[in-house]
Image (tube, rainbow, N blue to C red):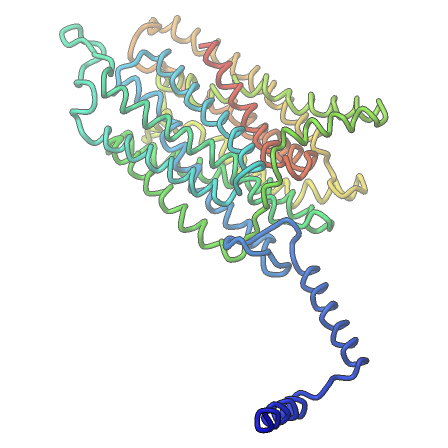
Length: 490
């Protein structure tokens, strides 16, 4: 007992010597330092945001224009892959799948409408359940699978209808049917689902990289939306020139193959920006938030409520004008140009390359708008934005009306030339240049820059933070309704 007691006493003595008791005032000082460090770490965190590893996003390390620039590059690649085939798809369906021109146009408008409408579903999922980061990767993989199916079908002759001559009565053209039609529409539906997912997740993912609590962050976010439309134009330019030429001269299997390779490349490019991007944590169902907001708005001033309602109705006016405009871009304008003289000197321009005119104009107008028009408007109006969202949308609508008026006059002239030349039902080219159609595209390009970018920024900034992905997707949903409305007109 004595020996054990001695050992125990010696152990306590050694412990007290090695770890002397800290005075109370130093303990308090250490606690204060620890609390200050924890508060500093909390201030350096982006509240409600995580990085790609699902850890808290940190200020100075995540977000900003550099992170959003990866989104812009990805959008160039994604839109190239999408429009590389969509812009010329009506000719592929009529020439190789043997659909009538009206059926081909309907299939294309329904395909485009479905793609943009699905963006609304993905926007809801991004707000309620999944992050925009993971939804983009999933959507890109789905679009990749659809393009692979279309590429295989375009490459293997046995998966397409027999070749025929449209003007010949000896070999009747057989429309695609059976498992061949199933393969075609499976590929188209997968592409539409993937495109809808990307359109519903990529723009809000980029817009959420900025700090909206500072004027600089808000200005950078506005700049992002403008350059997002600019990047759309860059992808479109390559699609309607280089890829369309490949499809017309080398074969559609090469066109689909380029689109497949492009969307595949966009995935690692997106992943390269993962270490510096931030992702908004889903905050629950936005539908619940809508009901809560409805209850809250009953207690506010009626005038404010009326102004908000008016703003939302004004933003939805493009759903009436966009249909005809977008349908003209991808269907009937291509068919109209195919009946006209498409030569510029010795160069023969593919009809599906018509959208190059508004694209080039948009690429010139976008930097001019960002660096000349907006700074001038800010000086004149003495406001942060310079031009409000609704003013911008209104300018786009006016330009759309002008474009439709020009398109109507050009179509009247084209038909008049066809009747006077006796080529109304002939396969020969009309003695009128396709540059007449290009005239309307100049107004359409400028209308897109004002309307689309204005709508996206308006929906994103005016919506609650828990509904921003869904609200931004409303811009694409308006295009979807436009395409479906176009199908009725065809």
